[in-house]
Structure formats: structure tokens, C-alpha cells
Length: 122
Image 1 (cartoon, rainbow, N blue to C red):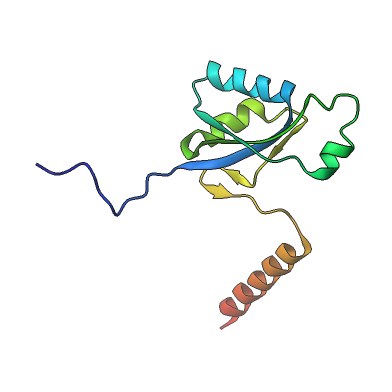
Image 2: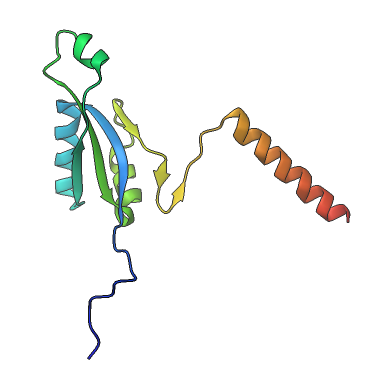
């Protein structure tokens, strides 16, 4: 009989999904995830000195946490909470990464396109 323990495999499929900065938004996301059976983990981050100083009237509502979920649930979770305004999504959707459109990314895309054209000409 084969052993279930296999030391060469890594089963860590947890990824950073989004950052949340208020108790209200965190509770709403938790409610949605529990309703739709999405497993999550809240990774509490330290508040910066600016958040502590300039927290304002509702400083008790201000938090800094990162919500981690299983890689297989990312697309479903994104569809459920994409319309929330105060949630900052990380650069992952599904199994692919989204890249921000930056000057460097545009330059790299242009270089690849030029290389492809040169290869076709050859």
C-alpha cells in the first residue's frame, strides 16, 4: 500500500486575495464568504504610523488586514466581492496574474511584438 505522505509535493494553495481597511468591509466579506462556502484566512497587518496618527474620527473602525483564500476559489470570490469600493484586490485572478499597465509593461509588449514581426519576416 502506498503512503499518503509525499515529501516532494507542496500543498500550499493559499494566496493573498485582497486587503481590507475597515471593520465594516471585513465583516461584509466574511459574511459573503461564509454564505458561499469559501474558506478564508485573515492575516492581520501592523498599522503604519500614518494610520495611527491620521486615523480621524473613526480610527476604531480602521484596520489593516490581508484576506487569503484557496487558489481554486479566487474567480468565484472575485465575482462575489468585485463591486466593493474599499477593498484593494491583489494582482491575482484565477491561476494567472494580472499585470498593471505601466510604461515598462507597454515597452516590453512592444518589444515582443517587434520580435514577432522580425521572426515572421525571416
